Length: 114
Length: 116
Image 1 (tube, rainbow over the protein chains, first blue to last red):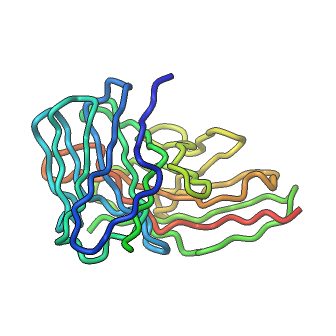
Image 2: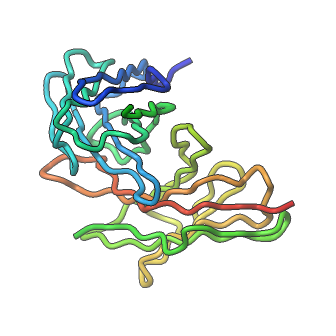
């Protein structure tokens, strides 16, 4: 079945550590996105990528980094510079940047700082 | 600035009664509007969208939404609520951002609680 796979489902990070969240899609979608979800704040865009080897900052990119070396993969690294990383992280994709299409979402990764 | 507002943090409704989850938007140009549903610790599932055409849009699981340009609203509705409809609902509007497309701005979400 086609879809978006995020791993791990739960992740614990110690203070000062970098961690990487995985996002893989087999939908052949061009564009991929990372959102952060906090209670009462909805979803906020961290980074997005429209094509391989290209990505742009979203609204809250500070303390995060991404790469897009393959069409299928868009990993997110939460660096030690992100002071409040505890949140639910959602990866999404859309078929083509030129169309008005709905986004497909993964099941999310819950990151907790311990 | 382009934005979307969901004025109710929570909506309570009895099973079998009609439900409405409100959404208003602010966007330059023609809006592209979406509703998503989220169950606990899960990703978002697409329900329906308005791009152009008929103001009444029908979607998944019996949901529908009415686009009202004069009131800049896109309220989600269902004639008869089910307990299984209880979830977090997000309204979203597409914006253009430096030439990129398919960028979504989300509301803060409305928790729908359907009592048996």
